[in-house]
Picture 1 (cartoon, rainbow, N blue to C red):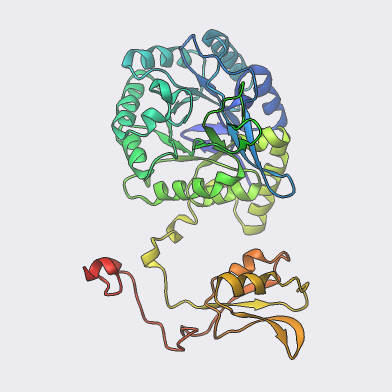
Picture 2 (cartoon, helix red, strand yellow; picture 1 turned 45 degrees about the vertical axis):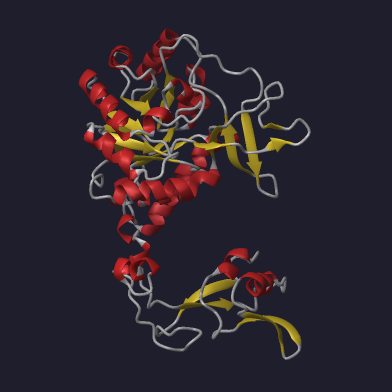
Length: 432
């Protein structure tokens, strides 16, 4: 059996699955239920010292569904905890005392003044918590007050606040980064420069998920008005994976531990985050969609996959895919693959032909000897794999590597190398 035990910043937990800072970690009863179900740790919902935090009493979530009504994205307009600080602190201390083998991280957000951070850090440290997470990512409500993403979008602020926190607490400091920024490497470098022990990402993405066309207000609608919120769930996973990889392969932050967040719903999602450099993962939307017992599928699935592939510990998976993430100009343009349709699996729906004919390279025929049959025209196929992605039958269409690098249209050997694209004669900018 693979060993799922995790050690992140010296913080031990029975598995690498933590619940992210969110409604599921807002109070003792929820966290205890999560630990009873088997979660390895939690990041307690963000605490602050503002006594005037008031959440809306109407709808707090907007949703995006797939065609079969599977929840793929969730938008929330909820703020940080509106429960009294001392009640939260007392519950954190009690839960940690009763569950010493589980990771207990406390998320924090206070006004951007040194005294505010010092005061709350000392209070959290007294609870026996294992670490703190600085919430520099919340994109709504608190950011309008100069906190959350308003800090996370300014690297100088990130470094400054991180330095304060490292000065006033002995606990490991995790900096939670916002995705609402052009290049995540800047904030990550700032956190590293400030002495952060790790970063976590991504926080939610600024969004409006839908508009009620009867009331003409964004959803969720509060008395006829709506607001932007934070988007999460399976739909944000590709964005999160990219940002994790960018930090993991950046020479300036490559040694910085990462807690991966964003759309983790299955064991495979978790394995992908780990492979790209995350030391553990945090989960929110999946728990809010399916309940805490989803942890059973996550742990069993990850364990089985690790067994099947010879991984004995989680640490053996971390970063295995990072060296294979390259900039586009480093890709091998001599590599050629073509689509191949398995006629035994083909259900003759024709989707591959339609999309290739209308939007790609007219490389799939619909008729062979007057019969309805879909076959790839090798000399026209450029290997884009759109047909693979739209085919409703898994493994019916596959991409097969060609033995030689020959351009499908010209039949000439491909020798172009874009390693020096900035000076390549085909680059319009270089020509100028």
